[in-house]
Length: 483
Ligand SMILES: Nc1ncnc2c1ncn2[C@@H]1O[C@H](COP(=O)(O)OP(=O)(O)OP(=O)(O)O)[C@@H](O)[C@H]1O
Ligand SMILES: [Mg+2]
Image 1 (cartoon, rainbow, N blue to C red):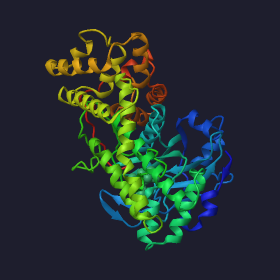
Image 2 (spheres, helix red, strand yellow; image 1 turned 30 degrees about the vertical axis):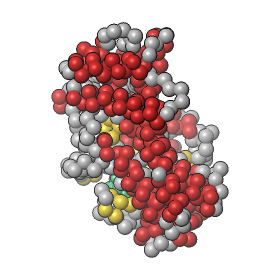
Image 3 (tube, protein in one colour; image 1 turned 180 degrees about the horizontal axis):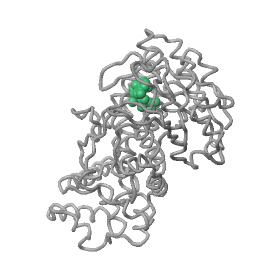
Image 4 (cartoon, rainbow, N blue to C red; image 1 turned 60 degrees about the vertical axis):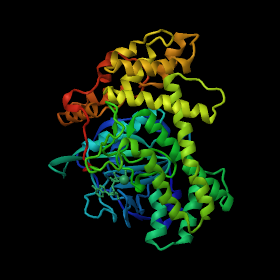
């Protein structure tokens, strides 16, 4: 692993240097060779295990915790910062550099009352979902590995500590800008310094002047909108969309109580600490905008408000277009030139289907997958059998067939549906079963799950059981924030 230190060297006032504290008896619980390839690591090794478990120094690492703040559940928290994630630097790879961070690497000046650690179950969940989202083509941070240990940590009960080795193209969050705006009273020079760094590192085609700033914020708005369109189309609830968990690149970031929907429910809440459903599944598009407005506010000392507002006005447009693209592919609908009238009709058709799914308590993923085996030209669809409200389905299906038109090559059409409607998602109950097995010393279910989620669109007959709806105990699991 070859590290460079751009953030560390160029932004000395934006972090605290802090050395991670090793965990005892480190061992690999999981490893992603796909992620390793991003930073030119050929295979896990003992030296790497000692380095990434913080029991030995990593060559070229600087070790720092970044400072940021953020809006959490609607209220401003003036100082957050990396309380348990320690960054080693930026590792070079074939597609550019990736920050390498030890999430759960020990206390930092920003730990407040926390212990700086992550528990095994949350480290495993973050690992699995980072890689699963990537293979579903959702923009996301990645995870290189999970390192287990026998170090005890206390949450509701005694658990053991683990480290997720996170790779992120950037760890800069909306909250970084909020910190320098609000907590450092406007600090326009620091805001400008951070913005110029962000542009040079991550949006190098843009200039560091007024025109570049406007174009940059427009891109941030668009990237965020596209990420959320992916979440909505793929049935992913993030659960903690605080502004300190929003990446400046529009990558899915910080995975705590997330869930993929099993039974479709628009107002599904996955976070135990969110009884009012601020971050419910159906609220995510609105919260994305709200968060961008907080970012715009933080940028207002250095970007004219007209430019910020113009960019924010593009949010809904981009989100809807991206959502339409993703959903049309799921339905197999083709458009030539998409007109506003056609878009609205399609949105109505799509909403009609998800409302039906919800009323009939259908599984989101498995229902979509059925599109890969039904004949779209037939008068009656095998899909109909899944619905209790068959009349409702028939009415909808008629409209759908009319919109779809005659499909010429049915086999091809079905194959294309299977390329966009996954068979396998990271269901909460599967993650839970894998975690319980790890606790019992059995890594096989975790590794099988990781393996199957690498190819979510392929049949993988030997793993068909991993596509099943949850058993009673695993339905609508609501995860706690304690991690
Ligand atoms: N066990 C802990 N010890 C110290 N600080 C913590 C701990 N858990 C969370 N924090 C801090 O609390 C704040 C909010 O936590 P949140 O769960 O959003 O982030 P996180 O999961 O710890 O990390 P990240 O956002 O880097 O993925 C952050 O400043 C985080 O570093
Ligand atoms: Mg966080």
